[in-house]
Length: 267
Image 1 (cartoon, one colour):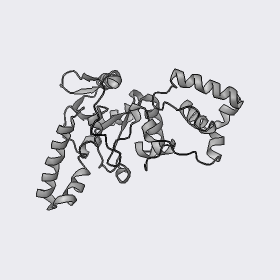
Image 2: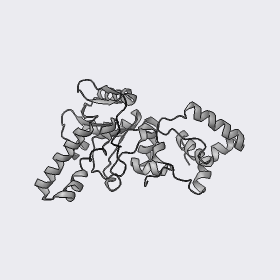
Image 3: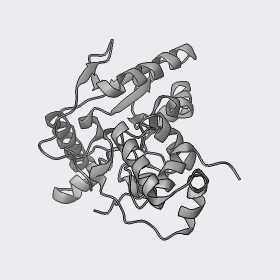
Image 4: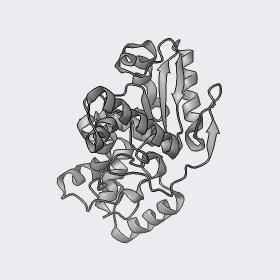
């Protein structure tokens, strides 16, 4: 059987300690004050290195720990969807402008985004950034226009039109773009945001390599029932390198993976 990853070991170990230390999932490290606290807890409980190594197996066989609040998630793993919208008071962290496109991204993830784009170009593919940070007003306008399109093309009105529209364009305050941690990338030779993106050389490379730079394909083709969003082979979400590797390897979408880590996604 494959050895558990360091992140899986820490996650299971936290369950063994009864939540004594909050795991900074996605960052791949514990904050220094948390690490100090964990050391004290180890001394108090008598947990040994051998027990730490066995933690994943013990956690798998033990009753599930009490689900933790989504409020405890670090910024890069924040769950943003129809059931968990951003508060009206939300404002993004420091932004940095992406060269050559005039769009912006969270400064904390900016270097990883640039590294992803540079690596893609070095590999001979040409991704272009077509969307990154969006203001709440801009997202509201996008949603309004999608509702109008649904009304014209599908003959729906009112709440039904909004539900149909929200499958493709997130309602205001439910888009990861508003948090500046999502980016839409298209092939330079084909910039239509539709399922044909999947067949481009750029998207094939990005899907295979984005996790190396901390990104995941946020809305996979077979997870729409969970995410509430249709398949988007162009929308990449930043979660941090370690979390991205685990999410991609697991085959889970972000909602499923967060729940598997012990957070209460139903709250």
